Length: 428
View 1 (cartoon, rainbow, N blue to C red):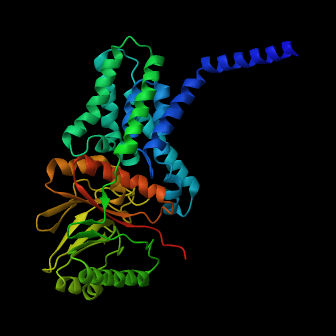
View 2 (view 1 turned 30 degrees about the horizontal axis):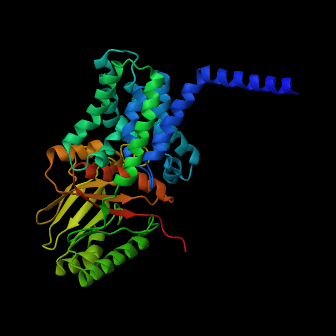
């Protein structure tokens, strides 16, 4: 019996040794690390700091295949709410949504794998890290891959602006430069990486705080549970609700600017103006209120633009236009008409009151930090307004992950953030 027990024990030990020596184990570890970072960084109660660890982990991953799988697992974990969220845009087809989700993961994996290089030349190691950072920040990759680590640096270095942006690319690059000159082998660097990641996570528990707010001074963002309107009658009911809400704010608060979610009144038809004037615009003007409504504006080409229309008390209006709508679901560049337009040069700024100018981020744009960086580089503004329409995400997870992106960039540049969001209808 003792001989049999020892034999079984030896066999088990041999199997464990084979697994440890196999090529498959490092690949599984790479997947586990990428998934851990994605799950740990994104979601309610998670640690946004952790996303900053990704370039370091990929840089020391040891091979292109491991780097790819780590990036793939990270993107899929970050976008884990995607299939259920996107299915609503494709007639409930979970298969179509899952294929798009996997496609995004593959693109993200390929892009992030650029952060690894077999070269031991220090500047090449550093350059690979910078290259992956840039490729994933810029279009076309940025349009379909979420979770860029620059967002995490808003929590690590809040209020530092462009210094924080520089740190987000320079710190991983300097690390890889130093790593290439280190006499330590990969497994020792990996052991060092574990406590560093733990320290980052631990710091995140105490340092993370949300900045999202419904009120900033005399400005309020109104969130709703209206879902998607099924017909014109429901739109008219929304307009009536907006009028009543404005009236209540006028009577009970000092708020003079009210912001409603993206597509609050859905398609804006010229005939609708008379209803808006009767139910909202005239009463708001008498109360000295500025009202900002999300609407889908038809164009002469037969397409639509997602927009925010500001109605001021003096009778004037201003419009901010979305620069990037949801690819495939809304933005269909292969169609001549019937698509929501995308234009990264469109104006997305609105004056809300004296001395208050906002950059407006429309829903899907939250995932694309580079759009916010464009505004920070060239446009004077002092507040961030997010107008979101996440009715397709019945689970709060997708909406939360989306919100954390815009929150991180607002923190990085020390801006107040207001969020007006339309969620699914509440079930009675």
